[in-house]
Length: 173
Image 1 (cartoon, rainbow, N blue to C red):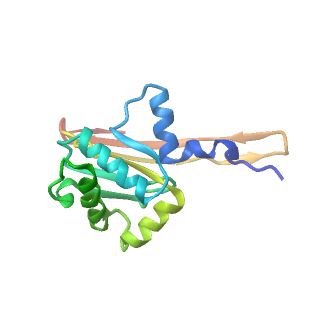
Image 2 (cartoon, rainbow, N blue to C red):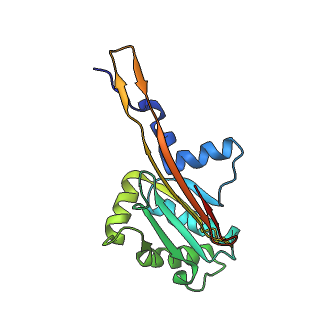
Image 3 (cartoon, rainbow, N blue to C red):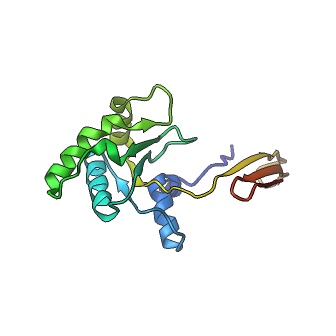
């Protein structure tokens, strides 16, 4: 029985950490951040590093490596961390105390659950990029695949996209 799936050896490239690594290697800009965070302790270290390197950042985003549809994302406003000391150990304690104040995308998510899942699958943290304009994009598509036998398949794709830019007040499909 043919299995149409990702090669297990490439699975890591589909995670948030893997995506950041691939983009950086390809020269694609990514927000300042830290990938390959293994657990909550690494998350605290990563956020501490970011608050030093990006002191004017107003928000940080924390993402589970294998989250999808925004369900594994949370936002941490810099104000939730209080006054960050220049002493790194105090800074880390302030960050650790702020993590339960994460604003989760998933309804009914809690720090206890999110933190446990972070320990299981790891994740990233990065600066929240504020945009001057807002752009909306809706996309829908269908890809029926007909499998004739183990050696031949035929795929058709049909799709539709719609975009809107609030700064220029333009839209189209």
